Image (tube, rainbow, N blue to C red; front, side, top):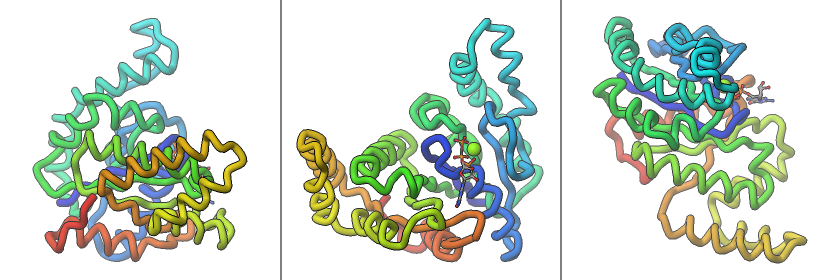
Length: 253
Ligand SMILES: Nc1nc2c(ncn2[C@@H]2O[C@H](COP(=O)(O)OP(=O)(O)OP(=O)(O)O)[C@@H](O)[C@H]2O)c(=O)[nH]1
Ligand SMILES: [Mg+2]
């Protein structure tokens, strides 16, 4: 069994990737299941095989602790940790080859609180990887791109698993913008050039310093472009994950 955590900012395309990639993997004869770890999601575009909402009700938490939706989500995130034994048992019963895990919309709930590493470590004893999503539309300005690299680095520092970076919603990006964003991940000098053209010089200087700090981490931000609905980029993503998980050379995160 291999477990793949799909992580990214709110609306970056996590659930769409989980739903569509699961179907694609199944068509390619991989025994794949989807796990929803988002207690707050109202409508999912796929049927999860394991769903944390069967154990955690946001409405009940709001009522019981007299909390608003955001406070309830924080309590819910901590309660996911308590559900880990149940999820572990369910995975042992199903015995899938690949488990795709959809994480909460608010990235900080899962990845930046204690429950994230706790779940990642406790869910099963098997190879695991993290797919970090860069929302293609959001990330096509240099400052937003850098913000995303910081979040991705923060996630890696907490979860410490092999991590692959994906650019989502490729179908919504103009070819030129797509290429420019991919170039930033490939060639730091192109990112610096883009920052130099920002009208606000202070923003450009801060961006340059931040991007140099990220460069020093040595993290590899090569982006795999995908479009979930069209299943674009799935072959490349699958090949990359297979290399990472199945003992081929393990790329630096
Ligand atoms: N055109 C296009 N739209 C996409 C793609 N992936 C996701 N979307 C749309 O982007 C919106 C957010 O997608 P979701 O998959 O719900 O994103 P999410 O990260 O799960 O969102 P939260 O769980 O709320 O954080 C939806 O309207 C999707 O239909 C894509 O590849 N192409
Ligand atoms: Mg979602």
